[in-house]
Length: 349
Image (cartoon, helix red, strand yellow):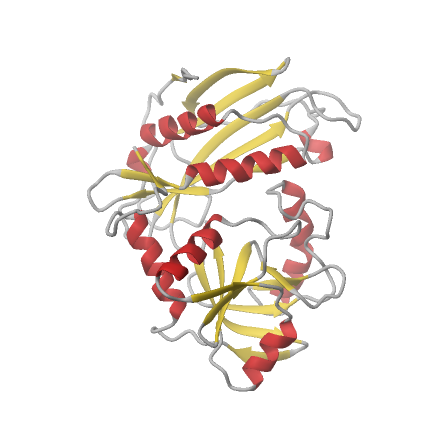
């Protein structure tokens, strides 16, 4: 099905931030918006970026029906624009919507909206080698009613912002064994607002103790590693790339999936398996070379320098020959068109 998206351009050009603005603080000139009413999607359009007018009764403000995605567009070496793995992001968006009882956005509408919006605001993609355009599709329940129910009206929107390296230095993290991010049967695999709101308090406690983030553990035993902050977590130990398996409590990260595929092609052994933080502790105490890093759309690869376990600090390997940097370079080269995209991950405008 073909979708016609009306475009109203900004009359006065906005001032583009020339320096590396903090992540998610500087919107581009336009945004996409579409309404869901009476069982169908209406009036898809791109308009100048601006505030929303919404009733205080809007259900999203009260009962948590809000889902989002995070993806990126890159300026390639030949000057073309590449949206990285939009279909994979769409699939995850669809799973999140299903879990929150929200209507599916047709795939064709999702992709066409991305294409048109990024094309309109392509000049906002930074030219810095390590920068990109962050893209945030999201949906909120807009029906005006106070009362717990599945909403019948929604807004689907996409906004963008220039993005620069998320973390400026390797991270110092602590293993969290009191608070949990998600439990079996919950919404841990979905990108819904409640998951992130519930994680703020323990994260802030960790920051007050001098850490950048936490390593989440399972809700039952508080032993098995799940994620780090808002990222998937990976370890490279004994020449094997380890990461926890996907489950109802772990997000199906697009960067995670990409790195695992690339690692296998590069001859790196991989293992998706339950990992006890005690096993990592034993490897560190034995003097093994342990690489630890977060993997996610915003940060791509975030090296972890220090892990605190039960109050004791352990140093991980972050040398320039680390395997995580090889993986990051391989992913970078594909996104930028330096190396062939044999997986058809790049959606080139």
